[in-house]
Every structure is written in structure tokens, then in C-alpha cells.
Image 1: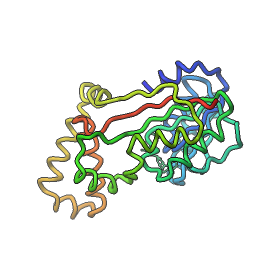
Image 2: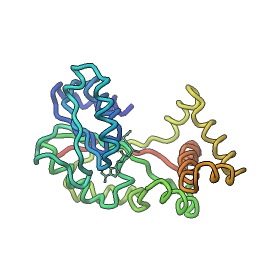
Image 3: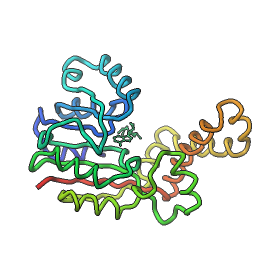
Image 4: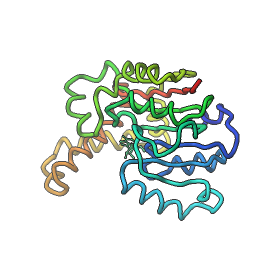
Length: 237
Ligand SMILES: C[S@@+](CC[C@H](N)C(=O)[O-])C[C@H]1O[C@@H](n2cnc3c(N)ncnc32)[C@H](O)[C@@H]1O
């Protein structure tokens, strides 16, 4: 669906795209493969960049030659002003405390007329304060960055224009459940982790237990409508 959003922007091949918070680079490769973009994946975590560079070796030469990776963060992108046609930022900004800085940086690096596609989770009113208070720190989520208002204010402050604001509920989770049973397996993991925590804590440690429970609950909350997705399509005037 996000790739379809990019397709509809109708950017020419060879456009310069930044994959902000690229992780292990899966979407950097997709942007090069589907659209012929020149892609720079940026992430603050060296391990992710190492894995992305390793994955680059398995790509065909015409894709690998279009994709590179560099260290940086959403708040400080390692590229010149007005140098990008597209910023792609998927599932990253809930980890960023200073959304004003992140959106200002997006506006700085986009050329006039450049576009951004941002996808992030937001908490819905169905998520209780107690659930959020346990889950967000475990998942490395900055609670204030889950609020749609904080994003709206940062986008406006950066002078970016909102071309589309799409809500994505449980559709992806429903699809994954039908295709692969992913949601059901997450629910099963939650049940077992909660029924016999000591077994898992003893084997993997307390921190790993919390992350596994948090990750599994994330899928379940998404299916229950406690978490929802937001896709923003932005442009720099
Ligand atoms: C959930 S992963 C998403 C990875 C990738 N965008 C994807 O959609 O598969 C979150 C990524 O954000 C990165 N990240 C965390 N803080 C960041 C920041 N301040 N700026 C940019 N990326 C950040 C993490 O290192 C991680 O790779």
C-alpha cells in the first residue's frame, strides 16, 4: 500500500530518495527496484547499517548500484539542503522525541516540490493509560510522539503541506492473519508468555521477555484497534 502511495506521486526514475530510519534496508531496496530511484538509507544504529550493507551484496548489480547506506538520524540527516526528491520514513518517528527537529530536517533536505511519505503508529482512545505505560517504554516508543497533534504541529512548524492524511486501522493485520496467521500466532505467544513467565525469563532474561511480550502485544493491540496507522503524504512548497 505504501509503495502504491509512492507510485501515485509519479516521480521519475533516478529521483533521489532518502529512507529515513532504514533499519536493515528492505524498503531502500524496494524503492530502487520498483521505481529506479537512487536511494540513501539512513539509520543511527551501526548494526542495522552493517546488515543493510550485507544484504546489498545479495541484490542484483543494477539495484545494488542505486542503493547506499549512511549513519544519521531523522533529526540530523547526512545530506545537503534541497537535495532529495522523496523522503520515505516508515515506522520510525514514534522512536523520535523531537518531532519538530525531524520534520524541520525533512523540509531542509527536500527540494522545492519534493515529497515525503511518512508512516507511523498512533495510539487510539481504546488504548488505556496503564497499557501504554507498560508497552511504550518496552518498545522504545516516545509516548508524546504517538500523539497525532504533536505530528500535526511539527509538520506545520516545518512549513510542509499535507497532501494526504490516511488512516490505516487493522487492515494490514487482518491481511497478515488471513495469509499467514501472524496475528493468531502473536496472540498465542501472549497467552504463553503470560501464563508461564518464569520459564521464559529463566531461558532468555527479563529484558528479552519484556520485548517479546511487548512485540506480541503490539500485533494484538493493532488487531483490537488500540493502535492504528497513519500515512502522511507531504510536500515542500
Ligand atoms: C521499527 S524499525 C523500522 C525500520 C524500517 N523503516 C522499516 O520500515 O522496516 C525503526 C527504525 O528506526 C530507527 N531509528 C530509531 N531512532 C531513530 C532516529 N532518531 N532517526 C532515524 N532512525 C531512527 C531504528 O534504528 C530502526 O532501524
